[in-house]
Image (cartoon, one colour):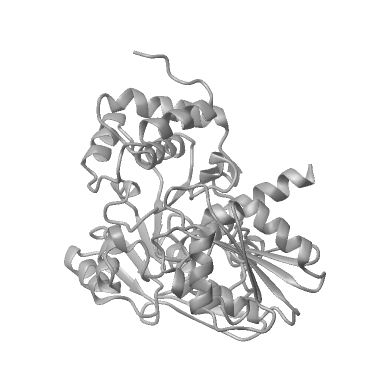
Length: 429
């Protein structure tokens, strides 16, 4: 038996090297077997959140409101931008290296000779950490799909599907019906199942009914209404009036907030949350990389929009920002995304493209992105297209060219946004 790593960076390096060979192996039998050997179970309510877009925002709103109400809240969210610890939050604080190492050791001790992917291993470790942290409620974000995601070895008391759109077609299918079925896999018999997509796929409804889940649909079981100043939530038995808009900006945030409030309504006997705590929680919620407007000039917007649905929302948000003479885009993407659809959704606002490669074998090259921009975006006066090896170079170029009244939007893959975050962090030291 070789000695195990004692630091978090060494552990992560080991997992990456060990699982470089492990393809995504569909099926939960291995993960469930290790979970059972670990006797991994939660003694508090668990809220699980899946969806094509909006799941991170929904998790962050739930965490913020529940923390305001004085509960001990655990959160598993992904991926991370700068530090792996961002994936595990205990009462709003990042888990420590020591906590994560202890949980990695626990998974390794139970694993035996069962192979686990990086994602499966780290999911079990973070669930172990949160299960032993004395939490009143735990929020788990699903990575990919739902039915076969490693998080789904946990039974949620409340399961939320935020939106169903086309993404990850290699794994999930290429229709909303196929993807809806995958996401509905997190629903459980007799438990609350919430879908905040205004047009839910029939496959999701059918699956919830077939297993006997208690399905809450937007427009049927809960809804929202609002004006410019405030908004109201109406559920099955609970109304929340005169709510402030969430501090997360964007077109779909009231759908996400409504799903979060429906979850709190379903859990109101176990975890009551008052009106003021809801208001304050929504106003103070923060989530990096989701239409995040950085302070200062020129305006810099970070957004992990990497599919056409998210890019359309980003485009709408840019349109609501007021006038900027020029918009510079720092854009990088994985090869398997609908890149044409993303470019088309953004072409209304982008004048200057700073395209970047990314540190992943799955990434499209900057030259491939440039070829697509030239086809998809109609010629614009003064339009420019430039290619760079990495996000830091692309961002530096945009900064060097743009005026203080212009804006830079950094979007696409998480790696695009993370690369710019890291560059900004190192230049500020």
